[in-house]
Image (cartoon, rainbow, N blue to C red; front, side, top):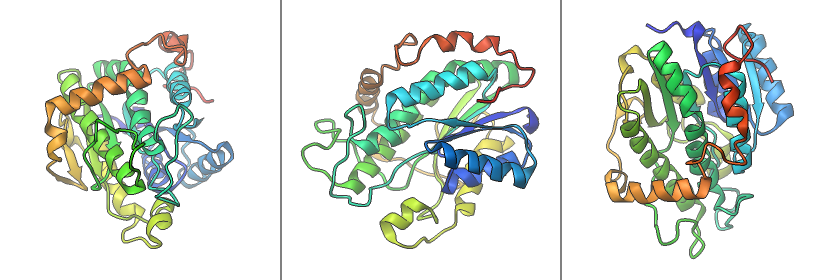
Length: 305
């Protein structure tokens, strides 16, 4: 059984809602937590709040704008440089349909915003951190990738992935979550036998988050309910070696037909590598920091930033 106090866990979107709750709960177990956010002041405030509640002094805040591929690469490079291990990557950060779901928004790199944040960011971040996850699995016996998706899913239109012809915010959100599920299934196949597992889940419906309140005005479930299902995928010994599963809360569930379509997954994978440059470890964005990760000087698993 893994010693939770030896584990290093990265939670994206850890300064609000579901991510903050998951980070606080996991910090309470004594694990080292890497807290990601995009507002430095808010991030430091949440870091201090979790420290006060848990007494855990192994909490490190990483600031990055995941709507930008530069931001994703910078986050991955810092984690790779400053941490000698990564036991769990929780890709939680995301954006909803927006305050005006009729208005299409673009990322700094020109991609449709929901697709950029909810899919391209976790795709690139995961690809960049795979060497660290693989090394941890080899040394510690396992490492886990947990992707937070949604029961709201819609097939990708490969003739208009960025929804330039006909836009709807909810469609954009649902398509991005479908892409994340397809990526998870691909990743599980790729990582079979390495000790690194990849699973994806819908944590709960209409949790009490800013995103839900913005869309619907009122919540139906609590972040505590959703957090429990995320934490199960992180910590449960029963799930050791389990990979490539979509969970609706704690129940293994069927994915959409497109997600099981090998050709559709191939098309998405090829486009994703092309758009993000994730196939090149020497990307000008990623920098040479990745090559120094094994030289981390701290006696702990991670250094602060």
